[in-house]
Amino acid sequence: VAMAIFSIVSVALTSSITSGIRINHASEQLTQATVFAQDILEALSARPTARTSGSDTPQPGFIRTWTVTPDVQQPGVTQIDVTVSWTDYQPRTIALSTVLND
Image 1 (cartoon, rainbow, N blue to C red):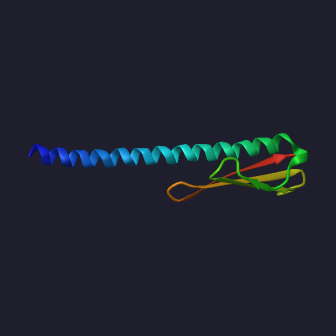
Image 2 (image 1 turned 90 degrees about the horizontal axis):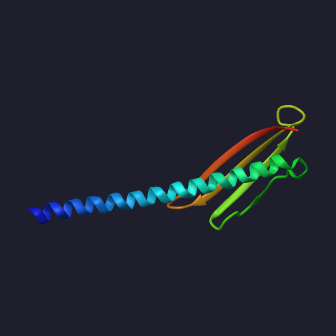
Image 3 (image 1 turned 60 degrees about the vertical axis):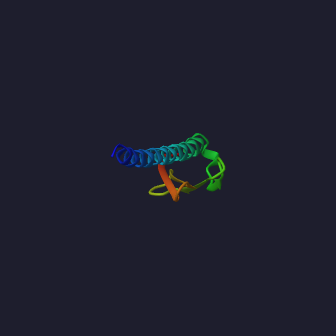
């Protein structure tokens, strides 16, 4: 009886640990993607003359794309949209946007 209970508990514990590791990894990658998106938003905000759309690979496995749209709602207003994509256990994407007065 003790062996049966121990085997059931050990299977549940192993499954729990595996899920925890997977969630931790996904959280780490989401944090990295958010930092990559914020970095390019800050860089484009700081340099008004260098605001052009583009894409890059800030780190292997991550693809960052940004779109700069000037005069969105009125003259002198620029919208910047950033998308970071990666794959961990499935494809994932995060998108950030900002609007700047020139």
